[in-house]
Image (cartoon, rainbow, N blue to C red; front, side, top):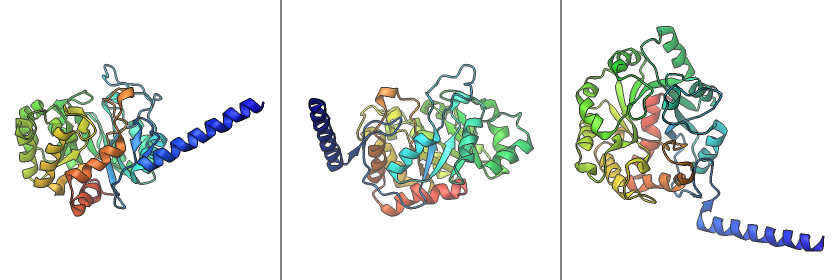
Length: 310
């Protein structure tokens, strides 16, 4: 008994020392779907919004042919990330996993007590009454995922016209080369446009690529917003700074900070479970991309509050 007690006390002392070391280094245990995390130095202004996150729940079946099948990622799990980053508001995006089944996203909206807005995936069978019900629930946009499926591109213009009447936006995620093919259609959309993940600008071409030129032309038109999210998706230089994608982000900030948004992309569904990014470090990258505090406040709070109607 004495030996066991001594081992217990020794283990407790070692654990306490480890926690003290983590605190000294500004590191804390990982939140779900994140790596061991650096506590962010960046302080988010009150009212900041994470404009891109997903929820997964196996109560809702995956759509036939779904390519991404992540494990359950709950709102309670996500609240741990919010606590780390100092955020309360979020935009819940229906992932490609569920096709046009928006129940998981709507469940998250219902449990978020006004702190969330939603982005749905729809097809043309949606009725006007159903659109009104989605609006009342907090939905403010629709998404076309051209990377992993979930929506039919033939529905783009008809649905854009309908949701524009509600003041919603149309969110598009597409490989950079597909933006080249879609530019003229996107320019003509009646609704406001949101481009995910910095347009998936390819690397190493970066700011010299056709995709980046198209993203900037769309921004120049005055009705497009771009999400500064998922730097790990296209980066070749990799963590912790994702310097190649950072160059794209900084140029976007230089050109049009008034129509940029920030998103965590939690739970990072395109990244393998054992290789999730450090969310604290990724949040801090915004200070490098947008060194001016006033511009950061616009990206984190003012722009999304205006676009999503918080």
